[in-house]
Length: 352
Image 1 (cartoon, rainbow, N blue to C red):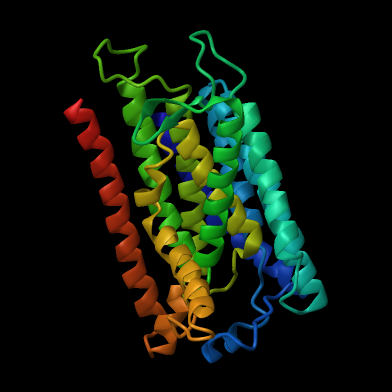
Image 2: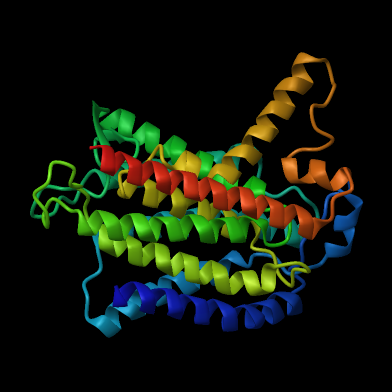
C-alpha cells in the first residue's frame, strides 16, 4: 500500500510542478494548438495554446513508478514494463501527429490510416508479448481466456487474443482522443478510471489464489504492481489537470490521449477485466458511439445530422451550454460509470 501512495504522490508532484516548465518550453518553440475553422467558434480563443502536454503525463507516471520502487526497494513487474512500452509507443504515434500539426499550422497531421496502423501494430505487439513471460505459477501478463470481470472459461487462442487486444487498445485510445475536446474533460475522466484500476488491483491482490484458498480467488499476475502503475497515471493526470482545467494553459494532444487510452486498455487486459472497461470508461464509450452514430445517420439519411456536431460534447456547446457546465456534467457521467463498473466487479465476487 505504501508503494501505491508513494507512486501516486510522486507522479502528482512531478506533473503539477513539471507542467509549467513544459508550457514555457513549448511556448518558446511556438508549439501551439491549431483550431479547426469548422469547430465551435468559442474554441478559436484557444488557438496557440501549447499542446503535446502528454509528454509530462508519461514522464511523471514513469518517473514516479520507477522512483517509488527504488525507494521501497521493490522489483518491477513484467506486466508494468509491457504497459509502459505500449504507452510510450502510442505516445510517439500521437507526438508525430501533434508535431506535424503544429509545425505546419494546420489540422492535418499524419493520415487517419497511418495513425490507426501505428496503433494496431503496437497494440498487437503488446498483445503478443503479453501472453509470454510466465511467472513461477505459470501466469502471463495477459491471459488466453476472454475476461469480463474476471477470466472466463472461453479460450481465445494466441491469434484471437492478439486481434482482440489490438482492437481493445485501438478503440480505447481513439475513445480518449475523441473525448479530449474540452478543457480537462478527458483528463478528469481518466483520473477516475485509473483510480478504479487501483482498487481492482489491490482487491485482486488481497483475493489472489496465492494468498487465499476460496473458489472465487483471482489468478492474475502482478495485480498489486499494476495498482501502483494505475496510481502513477492517476497522480500524473491529476497534476496535469491543474493546468488543463478551464481555461486550459496546455492541452495533452494526441501524445497524451493515445497514450492514456493505451494505459487504460493495457491495465484492463492485464488485470483480466477486459469487458469491464466498457462501464469503467463509460464516458469514452458514449462519446465514441456519438461519432459512430453521427456517421451512420449521415450516410443513411443522405446528409442529415443526428447531432449538431460530433463528438457529443460539441453538440451541447452548439446548444449553448457553457464549456465548464459540459465538463462537470460529463465528469458526473464518468463517475457514475466508474461506480457501475466497480459495482459489477464486486457483485460478481460476492455472487461467486
